[in-house]
Amino acid sequence: PENSNTASPSDRAGVGVDWEARYNAGDTPWEKGAPHPALVEWLQKNSLLGRVLVPGCGAGHDVREISRNPASEVVGFDIAPSAIRMAGSFAPVGRETFVLGDFLAGDALRLGPFDALFEHTCFCAIHPTRRADYAREAAAALKPGGLLVGVFYGNPDNPDPDSPPFASPYEAVTAQFAQNFEVVKKNENLATYPGREGCEYLLVLRKR
Image (cartoon, rainbow, N blue to C red):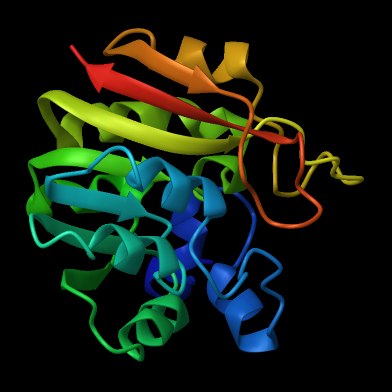
């Protein structure tokens, strides 16, 4: 459009998807009503302490799960206003907040630095041509030594290769993060939502 101010803020994500329109239409298959089972399981033996960022937080289920630890201050970040409103409609669990913005455009940097970042539905939702932007912003938002813990959708079995979720195989993901991160752990035997068995893996990366 000639007047960029009339464009949807979701256009800035560069993926050809108007996420706000999808929320308004109730077209949100990623909304499961609960935190990812692999996150719940991982937090039983590990912690995400300090300031934690969750990009593409949606309704905030993962945010609230992490913020159950009183030592965690969690920021949920999303480009869709309806997602932020939905996340804020739940009773607070701990020290969580929800902020509207475009992670790929650097909007989260004003909130940092962070000790950790949790990834679940953001990376697979962006077009593969923007993954370098994600890796750059994740590195910029994290302190040296900060952790990126992600549940990556290696094989979403998506019949439409031109729309999300996009496959995020291990080699492609680690290649994007190789410049600024080292792999700490990979786990392919995950607890997950029904229908996603064998499609995901959990990856722990540490910023150099």
